[in-house]
Length: 144
Image 1 (cartoon, rainbow, N blue to C red):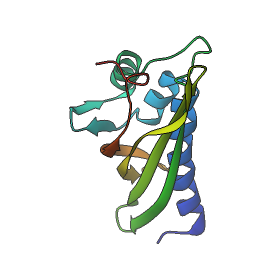
Image 2 (cartoon, helix red, strand yellow):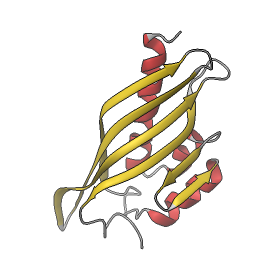
Image 3 (spheres, rainbow, N blue to C red):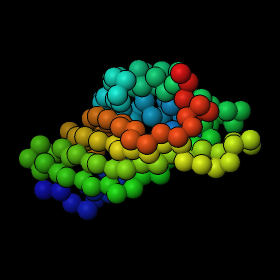
Image 4 (tube, rainbow, N blue to C red):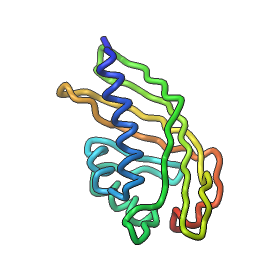
């Protein structure tokens, strides 16, 4: 049976992902997915090192070491499978970016489809699927 503490732990994982990406800590993002996969329409990768490498090649970091973004995650719905100590979550996300010569603006919006597991009493990501449904100017955020 799930508890408020389980929901909070999963919500905190979702928030931690945004904090790590926005701070440019791709090793930290990789660690969140040490036992999981990270995917998008371009395919998926598995494990810490592969996810850190993917983000390092894909996301542009600036002089301060960050991508100069803020990921805002909303409308999170969590469903538990109490028998398996597993859960799924669906969330909306919006990514904002600002640079000295680029006014603050939304550059992407979409959905996260996450799965979580709790094998040893601690929740962790098992998988994240990122679906961008609305794209703005990503030229200063993602490499081609």
